[in-house]
Each structure stands twice: as structure tokens, then as C-alpha cells.
Amino acid sequence: MDKTSAGWINGFLGMLIFSGSLPATRAAVTGFDPVFLTVARAVIAGLLGLGLLLAFRQPRPARADLVPLVITALGVVVGFPLLTALALQHITSAHSVVYVGLLPLSTAVFGVLRGGERPQPPFWLFSGLGSICVAGFALSRGVGAASVGDLLMLAAIVVCGLGYAEGARLSRRLGGWQVISWALVLSLPVMAAAVLATWPSSAQGITESAWLGLAYVSLFSMLIGFVFWYRGLALGGIAAVGQLQLLQPFFGLALAATLLHEAVEPAMIAVTAVVVLCVFGARRFA
Image 1 (cartoon, one colour):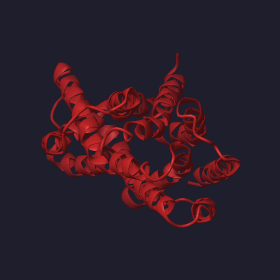
Image 2 (image 1 turned 60 degrees about the horizontal axis):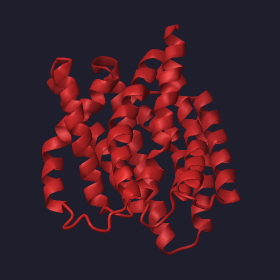
Image 3 (image 1 turned 90 degrees about the vertical axis):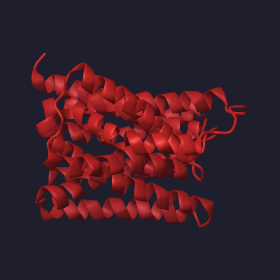
Image 4 (image 1 turned 120 degrees about the vertical axis):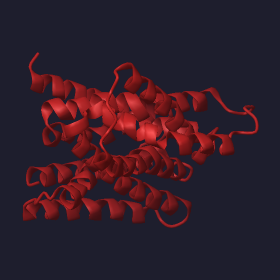
């Protein structure tokens, strides 16, 4: 198997794993506080990441890499998990998946701001169309509890895009799985203290689906998915393999309907399809 094919296969597996993140988070927040869920998944994944770094005797990152690692951690270890967990107390995972269609675009924008890239003018046309589409969908849901979830999801996409962009830059020097492992390890002391502070008073009433959700987001969403995803980016190219994220909303909607029995409205499918088309157009001119 050639390098490019291996990159696409690894990237697809990573994207497929990430597709289950929002449905699993939705299941987990039925039994766990969102803050506890965020810090618990980071601690579990951080301990596993530390074990990997020690087992493979990875060198410590250079001092110049510490700030980018902290930014990566704030985006993908703390920001996105916490904001999505809070959002999913107000909206369904099927609703939230629509916003994931903007994640490749968010990552590209931070690639401009942080990486000095200069996309062609049509990129911003497609970017604006996609953003207007998502904003229109959110407004069509009306005001109230759902609007809180919409705003939290938009914030989650922004911070995750920043974390992805920083992680992609670092992966060229440190390696893909090493980046997420070091980001988790740097977060571990604070997250461990937060776990103790937010530990549930009782495990009674926590359903099996909530435990399974916690296990999934800790093992797969927080660590294993990144192993495949960053390896795919490294082997197949960040720009090329990164487009696989555009398939994530469709897999997410399918999982939400199949596993959580959530209603998937035709409007959600239509908006997701339009956003994906807009992001495809934007990426072509990036």
C-alpha cells in the first residue's frame, strides 16, 4: 500500500471515530455533569497518552512548542469537549451535527491567521454562504433554550478550528499522535484536580448509556481518533485528507438517528448538505 492510500485510510478511520463524538456526548450528559465529563475524559485519555509517550520514549517538546501545545489543548482538550457538552444539554446531537460542517472552514480560517495562508477570493464567498446558511438554520429554530445550544456549538467550532490548526502545525515537527498526547499530558494536572472537585456524589441513577458515552469520548474521541486522524494528515497531506471531515455530519446524523433514536429533520439534512458543498468550494480555492 502506498503512502497516499494509507493516509486516506487512516484519515477516514479518524473521521469515522469523530463522527460518534457528539452522539456519545449526548448520551453521557444524561448522567454526568458537563464539566465533570470534560475533565474526566481528558484525565482518562491523558493517562493513556502519558503511557504511550513513556512506552515509546518520546523526547520532550522544545520550549518553543509549549505555547502552541497549550493552544491545542485549550481548543481540543478543554474548549470543544466542554462547549459541546454544555450545548447538548439544550439541543439534540442531530441538531448539533449541522455545525460540524463548518469545522473544516474554521480550521482553514485559523490556517490563514496562524499559518500565513492566503486563499483566493472565491474562498471567502463560499465561506460567507456557508456561514449564512448555518446562521439562518439557527435563527429558524427560534429563541429560548435551543438558541443557547446554537451559540455554544458555534463557539465550540471556533475553538476546535484553532486547536486543529495549531495541532496540524505542530504535527509536522512532533508527529501526529505525539501532539495530542503532549497536549493531554500538559492538561493532566489541572484536569485531575478538576475531576476531584466535580466528582459525582453518587453513581446511582447513571445509566449504562451514560457510562458507554463517557468511555467512547475518553478512549476514541479524545485519543484513538487523533492517532488515526493525525497519521492520515501526515501521510496523505493536511489539505487533501482534511476534506474527509466534510463527511462527518452525514455519519453523525446517521448515528444520532440509529443509536439515540433522535428525529433527523429534513431541514437538518438539507442544511448539512449545503454547508458541505460550500466548504468543498471554499477548500478548492484555499
